[in-house]
Image (cartoon, rainbow, N blue to C red; front, side, top):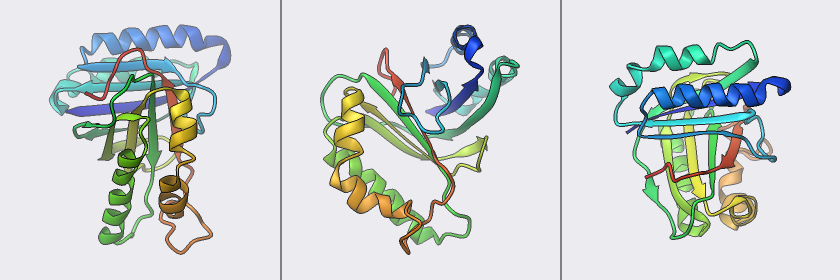
Length: 208
């Protein structure tokens, strides 16, 4: 599978129109799975509209890239963050999937590969402990766009918004293990740039 993430900052008076236009552009791609939804309060650097497109392979996306990216040239769209990446979703815990969340981050250039691997392994531990995660995927980013040269995309489906804001963000595996990679006051820090933490309501599962 091959996925595309776009986080769109949109001028407030034009958000409803842009949302409809981008939803139409996403439908024209024929993507295997799509999410084009307004972001929910609490997103940080996450844009006003979250776009996720999932294709069978990269070639399928390339057939539609020009048309879809053309729709993002709208003057009301003031900033775009995103990335493209291959990979396959992993199952989480049983339950409904009401929220989709994506995290774009950039590991510092020059970080030892063994350190990056350990960081990735610790991220992969989180779905084991957080029972509100119903599906997830950790990917190395390709073709990043926006504020930083994003190196990773970490995405999840959650049972609901409370499952993200409570059991996930407040779980000891998050603040006692994973957070040190992001904390400038620790010697383990490898992510110093601002991350994109974006989430939205999920009409239908996308990580499957």
